[in-house]
Length: 285
Image 1: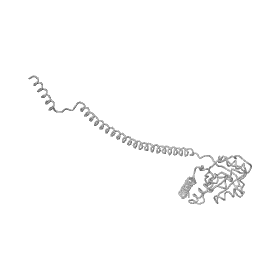
Image 2: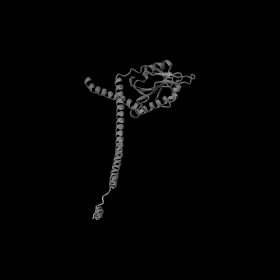
Image 3: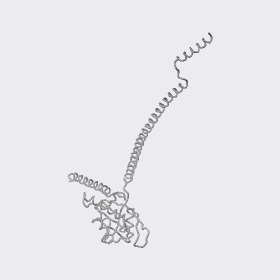
């Protein structure tokens, strides 16, 4: 009985375990966790890739924003530089105008020799405007350029007022610039130009009156040398008084515009004086 019962129990046990539901072993659970881990890792990688993509996009956006910002800053700096430059130039012009309210004491009496060898003085030019340039006929480049500029400025005035202003050339090289040489030189420019020369003492006197600097440079011989000198045009009124001067950087048009202003001002003053005399004359009669 005992042995039968033991066999029956073993048999029943086998049947019991055979009919129990199959449970995944712990190892199988590890695989499940591994699979879940893989899914989570893949998701994390996707999120990381997405984050990196967003970061790249953000960097691209930041780069464009930086470029636009840099352009704006650069544009503002250029504008501000131009503003300061214009302001400085305006202040310089204002200072120059203020300094020249008191007209410099330039010009004065002189006695020179014209292109035909005739002696002339400053009194021979009263009643006409003068545009005077100091130079020398052997000048290789600067003087011809300035003489051409003088001619253009005079022609602009002639187109509006007629022959109201006379161009004048005064030599600062009296040793070589004899009247005949000055005459040939002036023929290359304006038909009404007055070419003047003289003795070294006469040239020195008129140069001092206009504060013109000149100095002979290095000489290879007595006939081959250059003269360093001021590059300025002087505008003289009908009364022989100095009105204005124009430097090398001023164009012919700018010179003509300046001279035109003085001429119109004089014409307006003359017109007003005539009108006042016209009003006063009946009363005086």
